[in-house]
Length: 411
Image 1: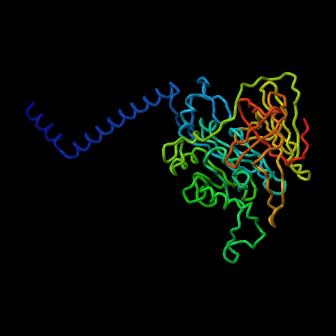
Image 2: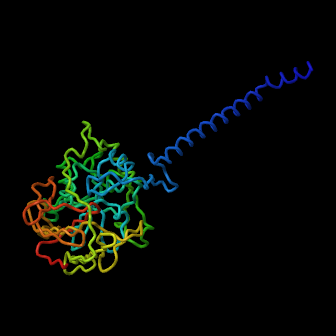
Image 3: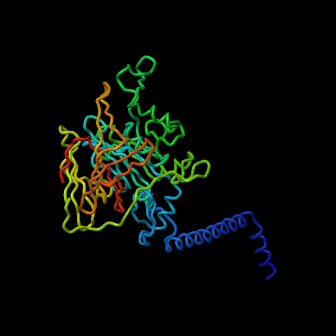
């Protein structure tokens, strides 16, 4: 027995034995910690109070919880978990193109508000607002394109948002003497870069996020396989989660550097619950931006079962590539605006954003005739009825169609 104990003592005193025991101990400790962490996360997930990541990297939360929280941007109802997320961020306002060769778009079905106006030559472009409905998961948006000055005016209605674009109208020219385009090529009034600089949005770490200069992969990237054969300008895509994250890093989270929330200067529209109409008086809406550009003609058709208008573009259902759903809106606003141009050799147009004009507000299968009013570039555009009272919008998606004054709208 004594001899046996002596052998055991010799074995346990060796370096090899001690190393094995140490490694075994570390393994057991790590397993224990992993079990505890997994149990904690699983428990949180069951309660629906925390977010997790799926295999494809998209944020997920329990969307079966009661929708008790109203989005400040469009009144749509969401869960408390989604509100907890959006109240750490400020809105993304992103330029998304609508060139026929770039369709279908990605992410538009998740935008809270969409503005559509002509960018050039009768071809329309979208200013999209992503905030509340981009909380539950990461949204791929695009194709991201360049900005025009009038889109900046509408973006200013959301305070100092994360302004996402890829270039813009400007007079920069690398091959020109002095790096500036000849006079007359680009009118000063349409120089979007200049306007962004004046607003103090455009600088290396500013809220103006330019895919061509100050943001890159994995925030934005070129996707050449999304639409095989599409020209390079139709390939810039973005990730809402990455854009929100980058915005926070730059000091553009929910609060500013002084701790002031972005909503403190935000004027919300008024919202009411929707009421479906079985016998709608405005079942279809159709119009053109330019007569010679049928690919950009728009039609909205009322779906009484869902109490939304379904969008058609160029005679076809307008589909979100990623969700496979037809684009829809609870409110379709027609804003008749003075069109001027071309104002320079590059053919840029100007659309009036301030002042007043005629407006049509379609909701619940009916139309309300009135006017729009915007006091200053950073002011909120309001929609008023015939007596001058602000029109309440139905809680849900909002599309604002900026149409040249005098164009006909059939409904």
